[in-house]
Length: 360
Image (cartoon, rainbow, N blue to C red; front, side, top):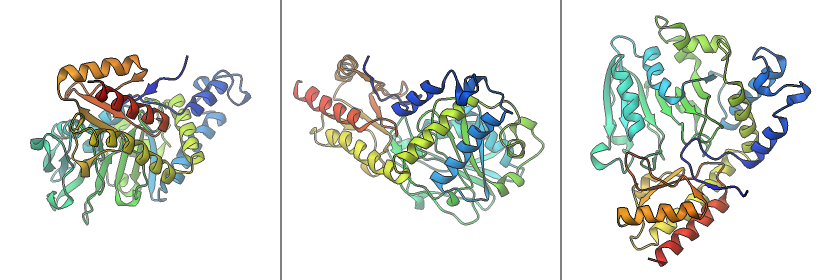
């Protein structure tokens, strides 16, 4: 069976080379006579995997030495609660920029824990854009400023991150980490569920300043403290070993591609193929995001009617395209072009879009 054109929003496409390598090692990892899923997380064989994943991430993202790299569980959804639990001390404010559903969910959790503030929002405009940095309001007692770097449902992405002196910037990068180079030192914390650009679901990467951990609250449950996981090298409880193994394999693949800079160039090329099909359709395809806020990872669009949306999706599915349905909350169509989606899939989708339009 041929590989599908996988445009799923998450869990999403994984590099074929990585899947084949994992297949080769699945039953007998490094001549242990066991799968990596069967190894003790205290064994030297697994320790090598764990360490490699951390070191590769540090290398690819050029993470400074004053940051911890943690492997946690619970996805970004747990981080929505864990961040304010650790950082939102009495008298401090959690400042949130709303750019879509996931930032709304993060704010909702923080409200249960402490004082919050909406520094900016594009909700009234249908989340079609990212706020200008100048539009963001901050407070002198903000514990942090939280942003969602890429919005999978609406297809928008930050192209310039805010920088405020004496303000800790925290970013949920679940859907675009490793899609382009970033300046990690401009953030106090970056977190990302793995299931888009890093590997399979099950592990959440948290890149956090050591000083932020030291300043965190300690009067919360032990397993929810960042300090617990930093002190235990993310081995306080049994980690998702297979997900971390796959993470290491994906990071190796990114390095083999030429690193994040090369991956970014390819992502720009892939996204342009589909955005051009939208822009050159004389309004037949209508992009949701404003052009200056468009995402490299999630391309959202509609056709002139719901009937045509349904027809497009049905014919696309029959042609071997998977995952083009828009999120259930907004409908329409969405092509998620994460790192592992090959350019050939995007070329095929572009041709399908042109052919479908010409046949109507």
